[in-house]
Image (cartoon, each protein chain N blue to C red):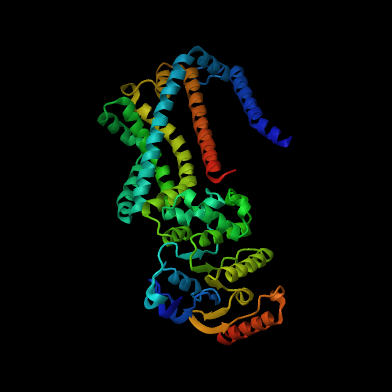
Length: 254
Length: 246
């Protein structure tokens, strides 16, 4: 009973908030180009859902591509770092430099360098999203229980056997935790890259629609795009959470 | 089986873990390495397993036969099972690492599980097993390749008293029946006295052998409360007090 109430509570709270928002907009006669009410936002979405949905799909495509690149690159670099301390020393500072450099600052360069707009956006998004996968997977590979490593050594395990049968599966929870952070970062990266690229970029994502709506003072449409982005972020976070729970349950048995 | 000849071990950080250790492990012996934390008993065990190399001195195997992969069974303080593998897959691991197929290793795996009383739990995952059962799987894993030498590093220290007694009894029975050589590290006087037929008492910093005590109490059902056992516990306790004044 209390748990079902707890489940309804955030929805209820949100509805009250939306009601107050709409009421304030009506009561104070706030013009929609300053702050549209929720009804105006829903109407804006209903009036333009074709374009907005297509924009959502476009942004999600970039996000997903960037996430896949992040996962592959992060795991590959983490493996290289685990394989040799020389490679670790060589890679680590550059990974950190790439991570701490604001992507907004390098996005214009990347968009100039990479001619293909879709690719340019993916590169920008991947640059900020690969680090959590890399650092988490590296931490997971380094945290293999030393007794299990001893056991593998005692039984004459090869390097590859130790990697595939012990270190990689042992690092899986770390990798998945990193992937979850990277998922939301990839969305942020995709949006930032679209903003920077503007009409010179792919010109079809949600961030571009937000820019466009801003220029045209179509503020309710801008909010509609924002709401879609928020939902996309929540969906990615939840989906990667489910993926992690599923894979770990599969790995360790019910 | 093997002779430890003036073995010393100094770690790179300067800690002298072992100093001039000399002893013998005879084939079929059950040797307990007994001593307080930090006396180097685990280090000595790792040296026997060739997981570490001595700084000086040497460990000589009888007939000059150096054991290869799978010829030494090692049981750690924790069960250290792969959480994603079933009990049978965990037990199979040493054979799998040597390239023996699942079908080929099946009889050995089932026999090892049966030896520790877990024949019915072959498909259970570690998270579904109790602490005592996990340790049994771990022992089965050490037995699966039929090693002549079984090294155990405080394997029962983390278990509750009742489970520990059961496992001690089963291990003693297993040793009697299989004739394996066992070197068992423990910091429990009672455990050493119950299990071993030879107790090597070690003193700490640096680790030295302080005394060796023969322990041959007959395997009667009341062994744990027999006069011989009580006398042995007393003897070991007095020896420890003599070499380590409080």
